[in-house]
Length: 149
Image (tube, rainbow, N blue to C red; front, top):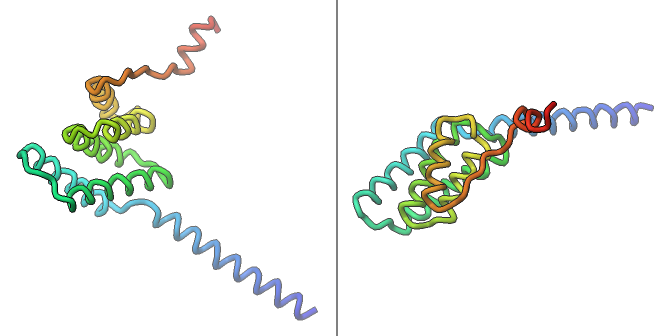
């Protein structure tokens, strides 16, 4: 009887420890303000180099790829509207470097996930400039009006 009781207590303690680890992981999965600021500043520096007609070094390319990976990972874990400007800036850098598929992906992420932000119309215009036909999704209200409901 004591063994069963002890095993239940040990099991409970293990489950408690696991749930604490999971909740801590969820809390830490969000990018910090410092990380977002650092990524934004890195993208700004790359943009300045491009406008200054400077060539991007392999390290610059690595920085851009790393930022895109961090953004995509963050979108999978917990999307936040503070990511929209970073996607827009990254899209601009890709567009300036003639990396059309990557630029399109960044702008589409804004339209699909942050359509209520001020950057959505800018992302739509950038996509149209890249030759992508953008169709606005039909809202529920519009579809009900069309059906005469």
